[in-house]
Length: 156
Image 1 (cartoon, one colour):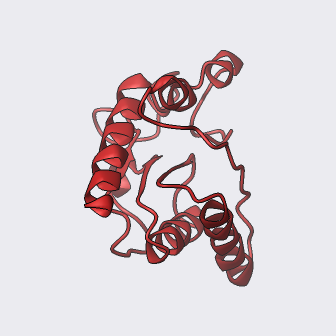
Image 2: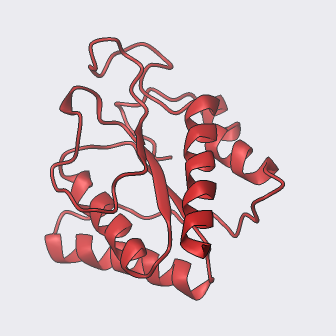
């Protein structure tokens, strides 16, 4: 999970990251690692980082990936490309992302069906309330369960 002004996450949240806690304690999953990827400005670099992240997952022989992001708009290009690069390598992907009122991505592809919006504000707006703009355990459990389902379908 990235650190950004929109998510209003406390340091304690990062030390007790719900996604990492859920995945690492799941008896059915083998956590291979956490990959942190930046969001470049240049479009060619956006494609490059997504491709490299997917190649790294492929080299690690990952059976599935959960991707998260704290941004929207321009960050959607990197996020959607990474999901597509994973999908074209037959690596099931789910994820967490702040979408809110936008309700979707700036760019679309068929590999974005497993993404969960982490916005908790009733109007779908970015708020100044701690906890309304970040992932919680329920979000983490939902995308973990969906990833396991996708992995089972892929293996079938």
